[in-house]
Length: 487
Ligand SMILES: [Zn+2]
Image (tube, rainbow, N blue to C red):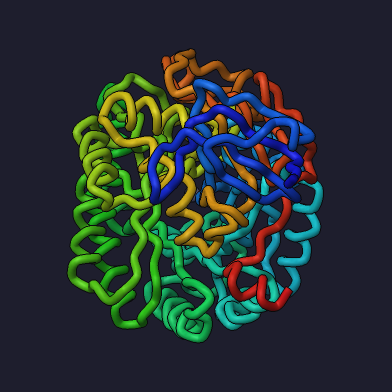
């Protein structure tokens, strides 16, 4: 008789590509060993009763910012605990050189080993990195980062280029700690090299460039206009100061450049109707190119009409409720392929200043399932299977982790979120297990909370408590297919 370390019994299993099935899951050695209508419990060392619950693949939160505003290790531990409480079992986190993070500039041959070292024993869930590059030296390291370090996504921030132009303020120039331009000319070189390395490794996965698409010249001009005539709604002012069409403009620039450099591109955190339309136009115009359209939990659940204050300032900004509705249409239509938290843990103290000077961003990874299930499944009829695709299978595929991650298949990692899709409760800060001392969604009623999270066969969150250890999480070398072969 076969034996299992763990059997998850009685649940409705949400299987990407196959739908929702009543099944038991047998786990051995951290992997899924069997999926069957019934597995005898006497074969298992441990049994979890999931009767009446849905068993989702653990979410792959593919947009995260560990260490942006707080010391890296501390942030990795507290915020990966928050992820675990939200049914997220893999974090792909953005990292860059310059101010915040490590406050260091230099080649990744120097910085990457520091990053790896700080991450060790710090994460409650599995993790990987996307790296932002700012110098020609960095660009020259792309192939090495893919081959030796397991990094298969890079990042460029379009709105950073003015930070570094002659005449911008000295502290702004200092922000990235570089003395070279990072304009479209730099992006051109960057995309060419990502395109070249992607071609080299394409049988193993996609080497891609993630781009924050906003246009800094338009932001600067629109900021001046809005500051002259502020309204009573700070978040609307912030949206007007970074109007949706500057996203549209930036996305179109990126589309043309991607086509001419053959560079796969992730269009991050599309916030508005105009951004989604531009993303879809670019996909239609260049069907031979690879583009991934990403949405965030906050742009799918918050608008500037909700009476929130500058704590909810984020880039790109929260938009109108019509934009939120349009983003959902794009999710339902399959245009937006992944949903992420863009989690950046920040405190009220760090949000000091006024609308214009306070730091952008906030965290929300713990709300992955509740927001998708409340806003998607209950309000808009999005199927649970599609939710599993948006937050697990699709990000795993796009970021070269499938089918180890994001799949419910024999041989995949036994990562699960066991969720009660009907149970409603208010968003309470202390139940989010984060170091962030506020959340814009606080007090809102959401359904679909994870009750148990399992990472490679080990329970890491149950009954409202994070029960795993920092150090349970392992580093994921991407593309998986390349590094599994080597390993
Ligand atoms: Zn981000």
